[in-house]
Image (tube, rainbow, N blue to C red; front, side, top):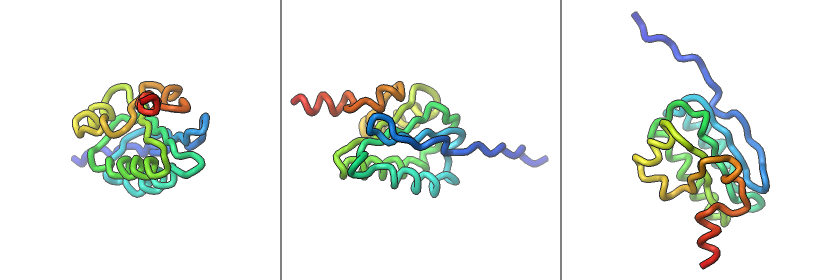
Length: 130
């Protein structure tokens, strides 16, 4: 008996700009097969006009460590433009994988999209006050 086939769930739900922050909403299962899509979507996200990028992972059911490279590359690109990569992850696999890999210290982690699209994230607002 063969393993049941998984139903296809789109990886990218939405791309938009909210309050000057480019927002990418992802859903479903993020694994090795998603890397080309994530590379394209996240590599284009930061720009001089919109250096801050929020990636909403609240609808992601499964995340594999293999897909973290596009996130780190997007972080590096955002930082090179003076922004940051803001990740919205409240529970489940995405948060567990980010914690297990130590990336919660690299990305600006938020619990709501509203917080992630604020003019300054809490980490950078605090850093600018020093």
